[in-house]
Length: 89
Picture (tube, one colour):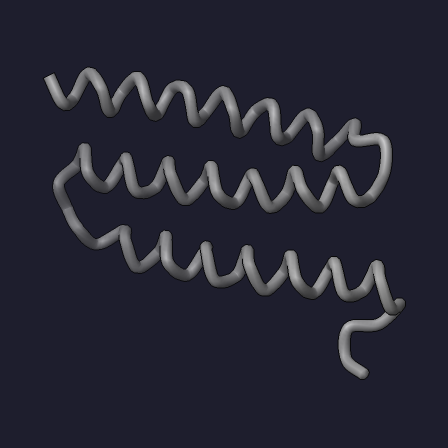
């Protein structure tokens, strides 16, 4: 039963990731593209965690944590670059 639920959740997150890729490519301005990239990171983290639960390994959680950290730092850096024109003052 849990395998069916995880498969459905993975399918829905994959569809959401494809929609995020569309917004990343077509987005009307750079702010929408940054938001789509951040949301794509969140969807990829969810897919990795769900795949790890389904496989029962328990080793991909560190990968998800690293992707979350890189996603947060890159979103902050891109936002700071848009506001000020440079990342490091």
